[in-house]
Length: 433
Figure 1 (cartoon, rainbow, N blue to C red):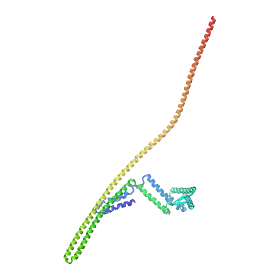
Figure 2 (figure 1 turned 180 degrees about the vertical axis):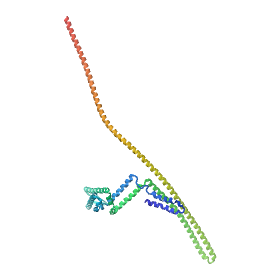
Figure 3 (figure 1 turned 90 degrees about the vertical axis):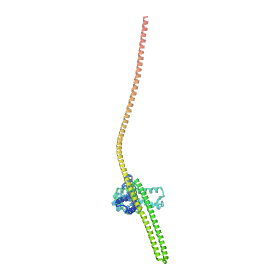
Figure 4 (figure 1 turned 30 degrees about the vertical axis):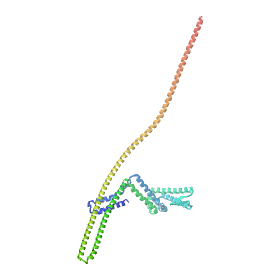
């Protein structure tokens, strides 16, 4: 599609170039050919391969879907000719296809029975089941079994590329609706691939270029239409004048015929004057036409010069755009390199951090154990200290008690000795008397 649009856009340029070959020198031919190919290069995608992971995934998903649809559309054909394809398919794939054929036959028989019983109503190409929950569940189980069987078949085909290619070679057996659907998907894949190859900036430039070309072509068309209208007006005025002169000549001829009786010489002289007048008017008309044609050629030459100038400016802008894109690409590469170094540095720091974090965890575990042991030791010390203080207090109490007891005992002994001395003294005094 882009090539057709570019070809249409090149038509005015080719016509103007062919009309101005006489006025433009031979040394400008390579430049023109380079300019002619520039619209095609602009409208084509800027890249030939996908660069981002997201776009590659999109295309791969679409290719896988087309591949699966191609295989699914040929399953009915494969099940009809299993004996002839048994050597290619293999035992596992052959057994899976036979199981799928059995499930499909059961599904068809079930749907036929439901439709015969009036439980299956079809509206707008879809079937609605009107029955008990058990019947609906039974039908759903059959559907899930058929879907699972198709998934297994696709998985086995993906694991066996030779069998997949052999089955895809049987494309002649595919029905028309499936073929049209696959063709539509392939066209959509091409369109999507072209869109993914085109960046938003390139798409905007294409739209701007198309608008500029459309505006330029519109202006050229208007200029040519105006010139053609002027030329048609001039030709019409010339024809009108010629018709008037011819009418005058006819009138003069008729008058001459009437006057022929009177004077042959007078008629001849009048005829010559009329012919001279006609020739003069004809020469004047031809001169006007030549002048108008010359003006048209000059305007076309000016138009061609303007087109060439615009192409030169467009080529300069393209070079500038390419230079800017290269600078942007260099900056992007530099940014990627810097980010790669930063990523490497980050990974190294993260590895050191992870190692230190592991060491910190180990130290925390050891600290927890040591803290628990320290708490136990501290508690034991506290208990021993309290026990020691309690023993010291008990010892002090016992010492104080012993001191009091000793003091009391010494007092008692002293008092006892004093009493005994007093008694002895009393007895001595009594004996002396």
